[in-house]
Amino acid sequence: MGNELHASRASHEQLTELLSPSSQIRRLRVLDDAMRGTICAGDIITVDTGNRDIDSGHCYLVVSEGAVRVRRLSFEGAVLSVNADSPDKTSYPDAIVAAGADDFVVLGRVIDRQGDKGL
Image: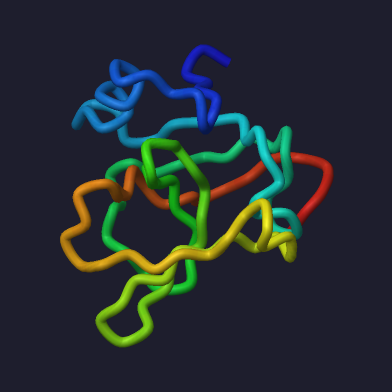
């Protein structure tokens, strides 16, 4: 898989390429179980980097606290909730993002996954 990028180990150059206008669809291997039940460690996800508008309740590839993560984003009023589907909230805590936060970037919407578990 030539365009494969490991989520959570992306370099600045890889993130710049991921956000370039010429590449809209990317495939990545998920390394953790933060989205267990929907997306499992080892699954390959397809991300539409041309779709960064948040549709509440869907999964997105984001940069949060300096790490690349897959999370479910939801609006609760004007507040953005960033959630892991895993019930292990000690390892994968949910978060709230303030409007205009500098350390949070939506890279694209997860549109597909391939793997033998989840969904």
